[in-house]
Image 1 (cartoon, rainbow, N blue to C red):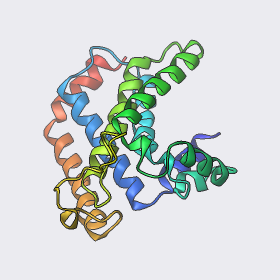
Image 2: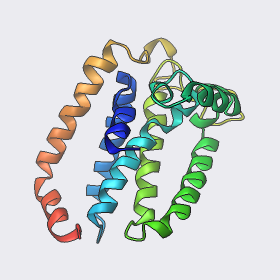
Image 3: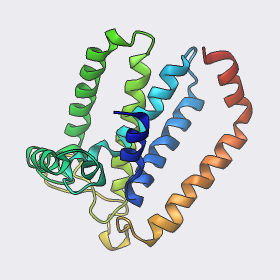
Length: 206
């Protein structure tokens, strides 16, 4: 699969998908600049960003109608099968059990492919993926559907606790306030931390 095809899969998504990816990238930037890494290769940094964005939409693997599945060959069939295995949308993959399962699963996948890409730091890539994954669940907690964090307890938690005060998925507030707000925050954050970012590029990126 070419990088162009991969980018289409990642970005030819609904506004909700872009919001999750931007939230994941925001969380990654906050983590990276608050706890800078001593040494990181350019290849690791690039793969970590891609892993972070994949992690940002990974919990929605349980949604067979998600644009991610529609952009893959026989994606609809695979999506419906996985959705049944995970108990449907916003169930297993949107819980702490799902966090642990994806953490172990992605780590196993990285360990399998690492011998072919020894220049990559799989620890950093793993953390980038998990930061994206958890950010997705946190964002969904503010929506009306809520998130079943404590499965098998069948309660979907949300902030604020009153459902009518939460955000509708893909609604006006998400599209025209939250997403642009995240863009503005990232612009301000990276501008105000320009010296730290420059230092990271000069001294840590090898």
